[in-house]
Image (cartoon, rainbow, N blue to C red; front, side, top):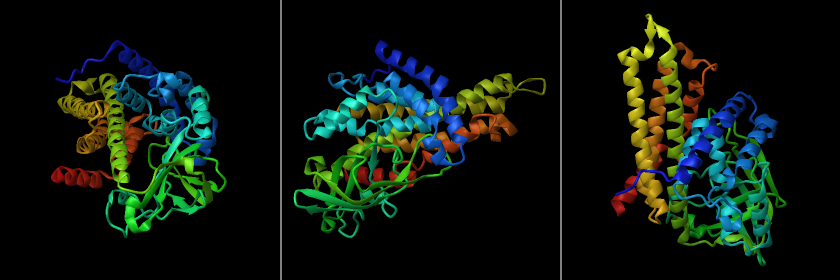
Amino acid sequence: MVDFALTEEVERIRDTTRDFARREMRPAGIEIDRIADPEDAYTGDRLRRVLAQAYEQGFHKLNLPKAVGGLGAPEMASIIVQEEMAVGDAGLASHFLVAPMIAGIAAAAPDKHPFYRQYLEAYVADTKGEHSGAWAVTEPNHGSDLFQFGDPNIHMEANAVRDGDHWVVNGQKSAFVSNGWMADAILLMVNADSTRGMEGTITFAIPGNLPGITRGKPLNKLGLRGLNQAEIFFDNVHIEPEFVLLPPGPLYQLTIERIVTGGNTAVGTLAVGVARAAYEEASAYAKQRIQGGRPICQYESIKLKLFNAYRQIEAARALLWKSSWLIATGNPHMPTAMAARTMASDMAMNVTADMVQVFGGYGIAKEYPVEKLYRDAKLLQIMDGTNEMVSLKAADALLAS
């Protein structure tokens, strides 16, 4: 039987995260959301200050081993921290899903290239939010195509060509690269053998400042504005062979499925955090808002909305915890992760809409936080693949098992 009790260590991590998320992340997220030009938001002081505060707390290295300078937190701590951060601001919380990617790779193989050890040391010592990773995989014409295995006509357009011992990369990645504007290290997937379709993909872990790498304008989007997303361009970028993580071949499919299993669990957890934030705001408002001579929480219609929100949040979290537990025990299950993510993100959309309704006319006013939470929730039905595509992929996997 799975034990839902948290250890004292995880409870301390949760309480620290909860306090930081409400005290620092929420006001920062609101301020960043109100900056009209995302380039101003991502080059401005407000984002840098809140990231520095988070890095000072060590959130960026939570799961890195203690042996390399990380905090070595227990496995289930991640999902707890992700939810609490998302209650503060889901956009900023998203930063910490991709920030450790290259540091984690470097921790596993620090001597593969001098850059890895140097980067790892700089990352774990970072107290200013200067170092972070990004996963550059989606392209303007290839998003869900990542799952098109075995069709030689479908492959990445960005490509890597051998030049002696080195690889030369040309092409671009789409504006949906999370942390693409700020990352100083990149997990890069591009085509190396078009005859093998997506299995012809080669994977690199590279410095983000190699000659020929440039960034496009950051994405101007509806919600999750605390997460910087931007195009990345590659113009004759020379990459040393030591930066190859995975050559073309069948391991591409396994790698994608492993990343997506963890990613969908994380996206679902962000959705639970957003829904919970909306529920908590609406519950507090309903207790103090007087209409008809009494607090509106005493009206049955409001009671039912609040209870329904609570019920859906708890159910979604339980399924996400199962997916996280499967990952932590070395048994990741993609359909479970996708079921948890789609359930949670649909739930967040429904709950935030209902919580806007609890606020009535004030629900659409930027003076109150629920309109922002409603916008943030919408993106979580699309992040890392639309719910429709994700559901079909999960259905295919179940039928094939």
